[in-house]
Amino acid sequence: MDLQNLPSLVFFWPELILFGVILLISVLDLLKRSGAALALISILGCLVSLIATIDLYSAQSGLLFNRMVVLDNFSLFFKVLALVATILTIWMSMGSQEIKTVNQGEYYTLLLTCALGIMFMASSSNLLTAYLSLELVSLTSYVLTGLLPHNRRSSEAALKYLIYGGVASGTMIYGMSWVFGMTGSLDYAAIQSALAQNQLNKLALFMAFIFILTGFGYKIVIVPFHMWSPDVYEGAPTPFTAFLSVASNAAGIAIMIRFFFPGVSNMTTGGDWTAVAGVEWPHVLLIVSMITMTVGNVSALNQRNLKRMLAYSGIAHAGYMLMGLAVLTNDGLQAILFYVVVYLIMNLGAFLVVVMIANATGNEDIDSYRGLAWRGAVVPAVCLAVFLFSLTGIPPFAGFIGKFLLLAAVLKEGGVFIILALVAVANSVISLYYYARVVKVMFLDAPEPGDKSIAAGAGGGALLLPLTALTALTVVFGIYFYPLTRYTTESLSFFIK
Image 1 (cartoon, rainbow, N blue to C red):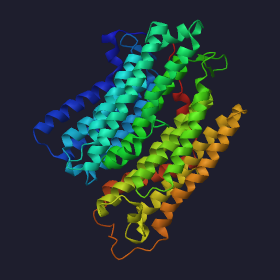
Image 2 (cartoon, rainbow, N blue to C red; image 1 turned 90 degrees about the vertical axis):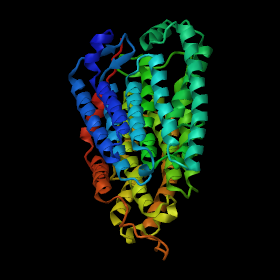
Image 3 (tube, one colour; image 1 turned 60 degrees about the horizontal axis):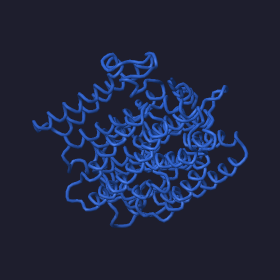
Image 4 (cartoon, helix red, strand yellow; image 1 turned 30 degrees about the horizontal axis):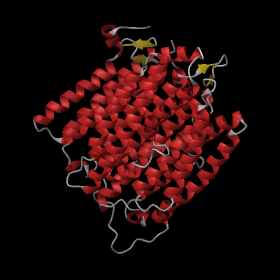
């Protein structure tokens, strides 16, 4: 299936619905509707868009809008992920005291626009579409990061994000121009066809890939493009920080897989992949993976702010996910898709607890969690402990299965990848220290007289419902993970033409 613009609209309902909701919220905001009403409309719009996305699984795969967008199971997987993350983020925002201080019409409009950009990122089949969709996500993210009024930390984070993002985007589009100059096209299929002829300058091609990796790496927060992350995570509104940590990173993974696998790699007869001869970008990813997970975990050890600690933890987890890319196999890709889902569950759950405690104490430092279980917040404390142990990779939680699948895919390749697996295991041990330290503070440290009770102002049932649901999923997918592995395996289906 290769459709022109108008026939493509039949398969574009999820994006059209979301765009319609964005326009509706913009109009309602002018009429001074309440923030709760705008949030509920946003959730309803995302649910309708989600239903339309799921309905597209029965459609024929193919190219839309003159080969600019692709419809396949892989793109639908990340669209579903983005919409679920958006719904949970809006729910979290409804219970956040921080969001009550901002213009909520602007906030929900920008958040849904960012989600729309993520959906485009997942389905881009052309470097131009990939760049424009990534910029749509980035530009809305800059504004959302600095949205808190009269907050110097938020404004500083937005400025740093903008500077780093501008440099990364410029470097990426420079690399794309090299690819266009050598292959004569921005279309992934045409690029792959030109590479198959094996007549291009290998050094120039390798440098172009490195430049493009800069833009993708900035989005998924890999070293050395990670330096914006801790400040942005700390300064941005906490619900958006949660969204940024899972949905934006997942979109970066999606666009990176789409480019480096069906875009510039060859599929073998066994269904796995081989890189272009003489352009060993998987070796670069192997090294970057080890460095990223190590820098993230070591930097997290001395953090006193929980949001900054989760930022460095996110850097480490980006390093874990890169392992699945470096091995150039479908087992590795399937492990990444599984890990993306469980990371969304774990990290959004952890940030839900951060919102609840910040509502009650106005503080995000780890010290504010002292004796949390004995200050009227035993449920959030237990849930956060589950999420942190799952992030470590301790059974019987979902994070253990995610890391197991990644390590199994790496060890299956043998050779130098055994070193990568050993580094990953060592880093998981390091991460146990700073995750367990938070659990120790919550359960073993005695509250001090000045510590506030958490029972009042923590978000109540509005936040407890998604919190317990995410906790249950973390446990269930650690014990019975077959449905999720089946879904991720079926989602690893690219339309290649």
